Length: 369
Image (cartoon, rainbow, N blue to C red; front, side, top):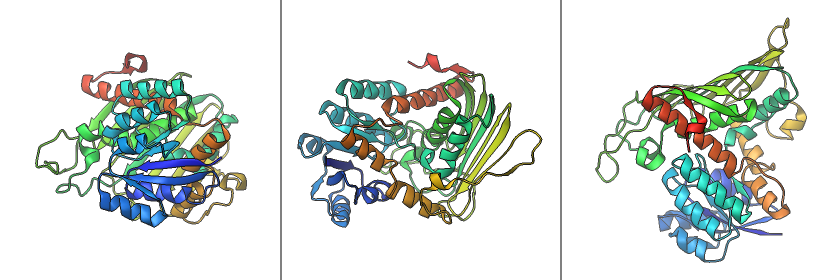
């Protein structure tokens, strides 16, 4: 079966993470690119040999030319584009965070289930070798009873935004800032590795200097550039997630580091990665010194181990993860995660974190309806 795929969005991320990996996929042909800027859309289509170019997502969806749609656009447009696509019976991959709020995300998940289509939310970093090995170790009982986890995502893309407008820092366009952009990734990792999250207490920061006006010259509501979340899990464990867009994290290609620590009755695990060469797991059982736990060959599956950017290119461009896995699931009717229901669960935690910060209290996840 060949799946006809359309892409909405023309960013470098759409190019690198979606068009490039699908170029040689055995079940896929990308037939359409859609973006508001016709010139940029045409350039991207020409680069990858995509035959159709649209500037209106409604026209693309109504064309009947695609079976599946990738929504790689700013957060504010996820809900209207996706609901239109689901209504037309299309399979949909939608970037995270899934929506502007939990109500939208829940509606998206419910409609997708009614339509019986394959949906996917690309929480990118859960597919990297170190994350999958952590999942394997925890699932196999390395920690024993989980006690607590601490996850930190340090990035610096807001360090020099005093004069440049960034839509991710605009509440009307993004819903939240660091919380939704980075926090959705690591909240999802906490959920995936430790289980259902039942309550949250958060503090969202606006610390850096940001452009005061949007491209039209209007003032806008500034989003958070840092976020600290304290979590409780259904299994009784505790957790914390700290994300920031203001950290100097070294001279890696995108100035980012990931730090993850997990503790339990029977052991300790730690993960460290950047965008240069570090992608390490270490751990210990009681009485042992902390030591390296080499990621098995079966998890690397031939991916480059020396350069993190090369690992990313191999994992998402050659192996069956992210966009490639979504297309395969459509073509071969295979189960797939994380789907819209899982994406909505993370959106619910994000909404609870916003409510917690605003009301300065713990918020039970069930309060978010």
